[in-house]
Image (cartoon, rainbow, N blue to C red; front, side, top):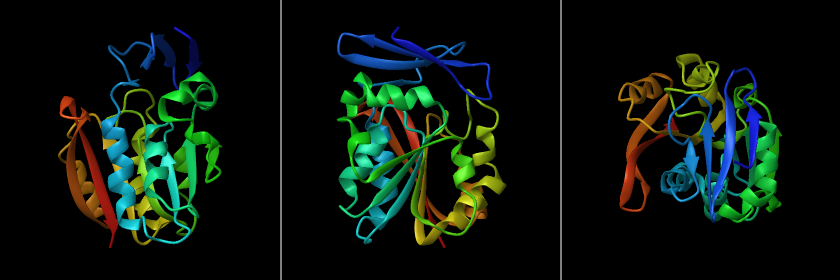
Amino acid sequence: MLASARVPGSLHELHLFRRDRDYSIAVSGVPGELMNSRMHASEDALAELGCAPIAGRRGARVLIGGLGMGFTLASALRVLGPDARVTVAELVPEVVEWNRGELGSCAGYPLRDPRVEVWVGDVGAALRGPASFDAILLDVDNGPEGLTREENGRLYSPTGLRAACRQLTPGGTLAVWSAHPAPAFARKLRQAGFEVQTHGVRERPGAGANHTVWVGVRR
């Protein structure tokens, strides 16, 4: 174990581990790992699927909720153009520092890209005000059925989804990652104003657990 960090507004802690060249993050009191540097294909897919519809827009603005190990951010930067701006909202300050340190090597240190700005705080606070983003990518907690923080459920509530819809420019996309299928969630997205596609993605290419990515396009 390399480091620990308290999750704001929660009794849980995040623990950063390294084994040889592999890294993992676990949540106190929750069996297994929250994420592992060897298994990130679905995080890559979140950015690829969510940014594909707006990749050709000049000056595209993207909000990513949850930094994690930086794989979603790195994938988004590969899809987007050189004039894009990507804001990463991360609740836990230590996770940002881990990514600026040795953990950042896993995804190629995407925080060093000049197109990136980091906002330390709840991504829900960024989903207020007039439309300002072309894509919003949410990899917060464990998806709509959260693990670490009750407040995260507000993001995926009808009110939270409508707020995300209002933050998107016309034709903008909301992409949501989940470790579980949550079949009712697609209906909630449609009710909030999105045209929805559901994608099943493996955590490793052709192997590992099945994760889910929903992509909603603002009507």
